Length: 190
Image (cartoon, rainbow, N blue to C red):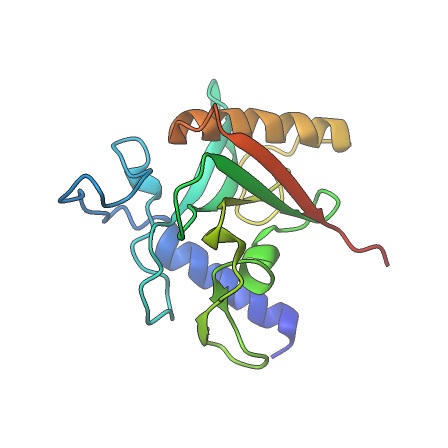
């Protein structure tokens, strides 16, 4: 199977088996998870497919760009810092816009590592950025990956407006409006 096909299969597994796991349980103590609450529990990822070790606190799903039109949403994966709590969020974006940021999550700076040619992940990524910062991977604009809704972005300004709308709603959902925000973008020119 070509690398692109394998990545597509992994992304489909990710979406089909994890994103909507609404089976998250209530924490039994106050020190369980930093962001788990009534508003975020529907995004809580209890278990990743093919991963045989604990992955800690994770969230994924679709957040509306505009609360007045919930049909248009961007897909995200959010991994809070695992080494120590920090009041910052680092956003990872792939592409120009128009590429899935899940490539960065699955193959570059995410907490799960694959060996070349392997279907299953082999270990925790020891250099994952989520060890030291709250990481947010976002697919955007609408039309990319698991985003939903009518495609309206016709240029980078439109795409940026959609992203800002999503991010404001994401900040509100996870109560991180006062956090420092860093944005990193990987884009290769051919």
